[in-house]
Length: 140
Image (cartoon, rainbow, N blue to C red; front, side, top):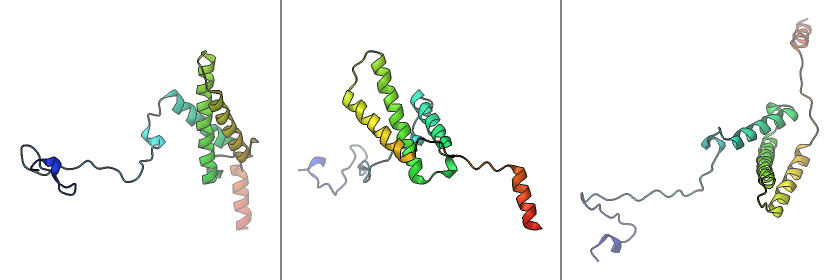
């Protein structure tokens, strides 16, 4: 009963040499969310993902014109698209590809695309001249 294993869990055990209490490892109480900021963004997949996000946002009228939900859907579409590119590359190499997984990814792409829309949205490209004229008219 005198060893560290027989102590209750709420009492810290002492270290072998110095008699100081050993610290228990911190166990996170919540799942740690991994974000793109945590990744090496130099990989081909990360570059393809970023390119797709930028391109789709542009098609939809620009980053600033999208709602938060649309931003999430754009990233979901880009992620699924990168995944399907990977599956297609494996298929072209002659590797076995799970057709059910491929079908699920394609189905997800279609659903997200239907929510975002597949037509380009025009941007407001009011020229500087028009803005200045409008400002002058307001002051008159």
